[in-house]
Length: 358
Image 1 (spheres, helix red, strand yellow):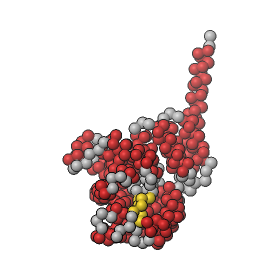
Image 2 (cartoon, rainbow, N blue to C red):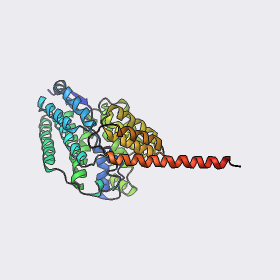
Image 3 (cartoon, rainbow, N blue to C red):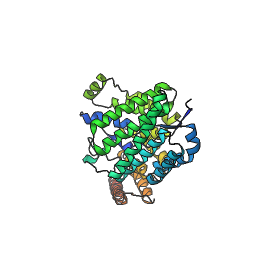
Image 4 (cartoon, helix red, strand yellow):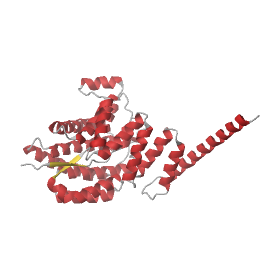
């Protein structure tokens, strides 16, 4: 008899991918799917949860704090506690993938805004050893999940593991290999497995996150692409997508972090900087060693014409000790903001003098 399943927290987001503005190309179709693939909830069997809770929680915290070597070590031990749990392999694979994306500088929010058709507009060269380890981990987890499904087609843990597996494959293909068709195929498979999990348990609130991101992404595609997607049976509603994500952010027990990140990016796209800032400030409190949240917050304030708030955030980041922190770039941003504020004050003083002159 299959054991009862208990959801856990999600993988971290490549929240920068959500800033992508899909174009009217096949790449745009893939991009819409990738938006939903960077956030995936996880759950784990009772036995593995009891034995590996400490490993999971530490790994999760390290992962969101950009401490990938530590996360990999914890998730490796998590697998050792229960090698029959397919979800643990995806957690390890996610840490391996994000470590490589971080090394290549592909996790900051400007990655895809610079060129809407590709990460930074160039083909990046992944470390072949890192690539091999990542793919081997995914294949091990896939075999475990498929073996479970052979005997129990309704096993939610195995189905969700396959959803996550395909999501990670699609993210890798899109961000590193630029294999658009492969990313599209894996993306479609991931969405199908996630939908199957939701149908098995409609009351599982966290399952609405990836569906909500798909709903939102599909609704923001240009009209010609939306029409083509509709022919294929894919429809989207911006309001429903935001509603799903908000529900998980407020009521979700396990995908709350991922939902918050998704909503922060959606808030930026919807020109709601105050909402985005509130979410990012909370994430910075929860994961103080993840300076990417701080950089994103400063960008939100800058776009909202609040340079003084952006300056405070950047100066605070400069006081921290972060690994691979772009200190020189941030220092230049600080200087530019200080010059901007100085010019604004000078202009205000000049206008005040003129208004008070005889």
